[in-house]
Image (cartoon, rainbow, N blue to C red; front, side, top):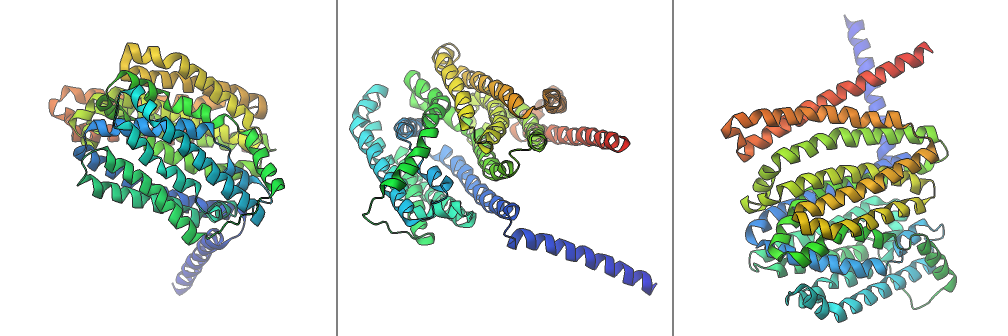
Length: 507
């Protein structure tokens, strides 16, 4: 008996030792994989905390402020994004990418370029504010723009030491700067909204977010610029910016065209309902997109010449996104009114259909983003620029007639059509570059679509019972359907991988 006990103790001690070694390798290791995993933990944890607070803030503000406040704020931010994208020179990315980016002369030039860009953007917006206000027929918009966009000055004045921390993969500092400043602004917004029941609570809170980031950047990554100017360093940084020129503007056209057109055709109150509904989907989507992009890019870069491994990882990540995303999209279609009612209040339930379509846009965007990461890892970002150009042109062609004929539903239908066109182009490109097996790639869609039918079946079946149409029971049944779909998807992939493994062994 004692021999058995000793053997058992020995087995558990070995397991404990192995677990500790793996944890130490992740927490203390200096290999790229360990750094990426630690970075994912820091960035993911910080982003989850920030987005949870932001969502909670929106739930509170939706009950304190009129929908028109969110609509007016959306116009202000979208207008500023135009100027921002036109003057984007990619300083941060250039500094991180450049092998000499850690040198003081590069850091100094980057700081002055960033500050100069910020001053130029704010000057343009300050001058144009009255005309923008007149165009949208909103007198409040002019002073709101001039105050809100002070955030650009704070952002441009951030310490370039923060960019150096990202370059050196010290993600804990960047997470503290980025999410710490955001959390300060979120808390201030909620406090101000208790006393200022209008859009100015949102504006001042937004400025406070970037002011907080700026302050944290100097506290955690101190850097003090000098008045020197190195022409060679400036040429190097600006040379990189030419490779990504226009990408930000094209992304903006696709991402914000609906806001511009809706703001022109509908009052700010209606725009506010639409904005918050779509934001309910965009919040988790932005979190996943950023997390996957920041962790998978270095992974793909390490194996950029091994197309088979690239395709394997791409297939697995895509399958996971679809397995989680398509059932959730089905849930938003059947439970959208309940979700919006619980989150923001009854009046926001009117935007349930745009919410459902936005969930489909989000899933395709996430899947498309993984192909983009492969292009970036292979050093071919121009392929993604072509995709975004197609999306932008399609959006420009469709958005006005779609909104004119179908209103808010038409806006999201134009978004869905545009992202599908860009995605199909990227699928064709990735097949040419990595020889991706489209039959295997398509199986992930088939399995997830079949699994999503469980959500459809559960939600349709519940309609025969009147009390199940109430918000909480309706959402609970939708979640139950999602869980059934996830179990089915897991079982299907287990069977597929088991068959594949058996075939390999037999061969």
